[in-house]
Image (cartoon, rainbow, N blue to C red; front, side):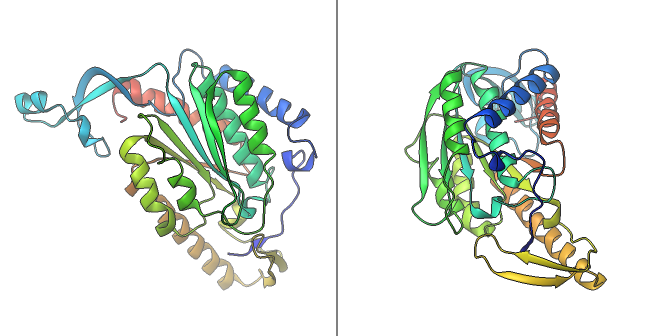
Length: 315
């Protein structure tokens, strides 16, 4: 889908010329202050995390892992129950970060690529705060252009991972999101948390199966990065649009209400298909937009996960 020409945000990471310098330092400071300021108390990251130590039982809810069924309690109460588990202290988190050329686009305060980098910063902060390890695989566009960053613990190592992701050289074309997700499936690792950060514009049939395979062993979070112009077109007359992956340029008459309606319907269908595939894979879904306070949206997601966890309503 072609996209409207990007509007440069006030202080995007990609415009500084020094992703590993002052811009990243400001980003990390903002993430630290806001997350620690709004997420008071002890918290265990974006997802509950797997564990091996048995916890209390609770009633089964749609979406729970059937491998955690508590059969003795189910037989005694005649109501399906699952056994909750206490997360291991040293949790390993792996990120699959899609940095295809389509993320070098934005009409809000940020480019989509900046939001993706910011999500990595927030995830790294939440992970290393508990002394856990974090690693990443990064797709930089086109086949055979994927980068693997080993999982390590410690704040200094997490900062190095963030600099490597932010400084990755983007090549023309689209990364194979399915192959990128599959890199988290091999080599096999003990249960942990896997996070996929992308705009998910690749066909769902490309990445859906690898994501379901990943969910068999790990708790999965999908962070979808969206720009408002990918959802609807404004009425601004003739609008030049460009596909950042192919470079093709077109002119679109946005004054046509029928065109705007069809575009919005097609975009809604596309996003609905993405959400449906993520649900089918059993992944938690967090949508971050370039025109919103993405950090506040992330804080709300973490708080909702924590609240649901204390009530026993999350997997």
